[in-house]
Amino acid sequence: VIAAATNSRALWYLTRGTGLVSLLLLTATVVLGVLQVNRWSSPRWPRFVTAGLHKSLSLLVTAFLGVHIATTVIDGYVTIRWVDALVPFIGSYRPFWLGLGALAFDLLLALIVTSLLRERIGYRAWRAVHWAAYLCWPVALFHGLGTGTDTRVGVVLVLYLGSIAAVVGAVCWRLLAAPTALRPGPGADPTGTLTKVNVAS
Amino acid sequence: MRTTARDQGLRRVSSITRWVAAAGVGVVGVFSVMVAKVHPGTTKAAAAASSTSSSSAASSSGAAAGSSQGTGGSSASGLQSVPAPSSSRGSASVVSGAS
Image (cartoon, rainbow over all chains, first blue to last red):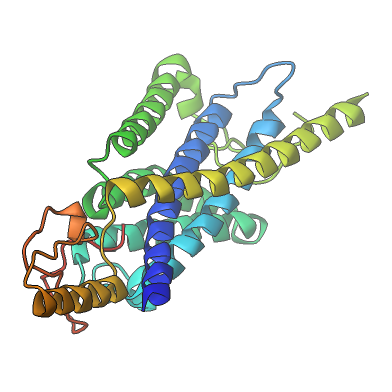
């Protein structure tokens, strides 16, 4: 019984840890996307490095989210089904807050899949879906704030506030310092979420 | 020259990604240990174990059998035990769970 309890509790701790790390990585991904759309670069940090990191971190977020979802479902303390992780707002446990997590996961999957298929689906469709990037992050944040049992823990609260400050700061910088980036040309990236490494830049 | 710069950049992307992945795994571990101490929480198996130990302690001595592993780090004392949640849909008695 002790071994089972330890294992089950470990799953729950893993759920909480991977959830927080996923949010941090998602925050970094959004900030990198904003850096990219603002065309920020330096001699030691060309733009394609930002683009490559943006792509890598978004895939890393998916990996951590996979562990987050798997441990949540397998833990079994509350009844959360696999389908609850994909279809928003149908679960029995905290349906709204858990639904936000499912929604954020769906948005992230849509962003990644359309990025991988960008050349097939065309720029317009890809661009339309990628505006959802600005929805995915706050939805994930509210999921964590609403359903996270560690939200009131000091360090976790600092991480949440730091994430909010980073994204709000990056978006403000985009709006104020680079107004031309809001009017992209036909070949420009509206959200800074290009997943193809541009080695020519 | 250009190829060298590109290769350096790609190596940098690869290196940073690996470091971030490793750091992410490490941070998950740190978070897990940290929140385990601050906010132990309850799992189904732990609740069952706690309930069993509480009832056995109560039957043997009648003394308080408060568990520090109670839901949300509660200060439950006496003979209170953490109830196992119902596995049926719509249960609303769960205090802590997945985050």
